[in-house]
Image (cartoon, rainbow, N blue to C red; front, side, top):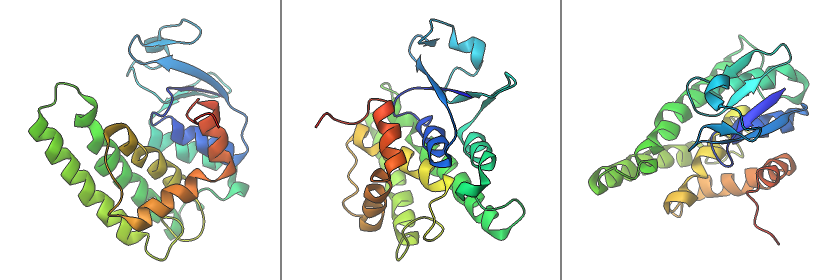
Length: 204
């Protein structure tokens, strides 16, 4: 399988899931500004939507969208326990979290990436994100991860999008449970490997 990615983008979530699952994954970096791949191919030929992640599987099919890819990858290695079995209540709880992260946090950052967004809109965007962070912080009280003590694909996704606070100068100081979660996930060996592979770790 080949994952088309951009360092630190939401494509980091399926990257982490693949490593946690023990799956072999080739990486190809995408320049999102020029929409070209490291092999000098137009990324629009791979994914007409123009954004990462895109996952090319063994038969050549290309799949997109973070929420789909993290489930697909976890299902390729059920023994890793990254997502509960289909049809179980536990599975739907993870899916609930994926939906929340996708719509309320991931997309919630959108205005902050646009340099033309008015300051008032950016401030309102930050306030909405802080409301979401407060909810997650509350839910993490007494838990290591979103659904309990087992790391799932939802945790990988949350880690990646909340990490964007570092790009926008947003403090997590008011959210101790979320702060502890971020440190806990960052310390996982496979997460460290993913960050290292994408050039996101500072040199010691």
